[in-house]
Structures are given as C-alpha cells and as structure tokens.
Image (cartoon, rainbow, N blue to C red):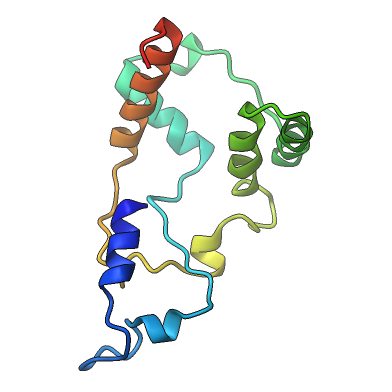
Length: 139
C-alpha cells in the first residue's frame, strides 16, 4: 500500500507529455484499485506446500463455499470478533460471480503507478513467520 500511495502522490496534477491518463486530475473523486496479485485458493495451498515441504496429505483440508464463509465472517464482525474481518474480505474474491475480483472487473492502477509484480511465495513466507511468532507470543 505504501508504494501505491507514494506512486499516486508522485503523479503530476495535470496531464504531462504523452501520458494523458497518468495524472491526479483524471483520478480525482474516483475509486482506485491496486493489488499485489490475484490467486486462487489452490495457488495459496501450492505456495504453502512449497515453502513447508509438506504434501496435501499432511493437511486437513476443509472445503467451505465462499458465500458460507462470507456469512459466517459477517456474523463474527457484527459480534465484534476481529478475526471475522479478514475472512469477510477474503471470501469475496471466490464468489462464483467474480464480484470480488476487481482486477478483472475494474482493472488496477498497478502499471500506471509502477508497482512491481509481487511473489506469492514471499508473501506466504511472511504469513507463515507471522503465524509462528503469534503462536509463540513473539509479536
């Protein structure tokens, strides 16, 4: 997010040179979309398996429809349970109608802002390390 904000604030206010799109004036009062990557649940599992050296058989894999996860998460958020918020946001990308996949439906400003394509394995590694630290109380 930091790189995206920096890129956005680095844009000229008015169009300059041949780039008439890349300016704040054209983005004013509009929602802008950025992302690190768009992946499936299978992509995420494959990343975890690569990084942990485990196999699918080593895991208990539970399948839950995205709409069901969304409903459960919404209930948790209403109850003040903060863990529900992540699932609330996360589940939308997997709805069958694709409503949460803004990369396809609305597009992103990643290229305009010069954002690098991020690596899922790097993100997964950070998530695993955070989870281990949380489990051992090392925040």
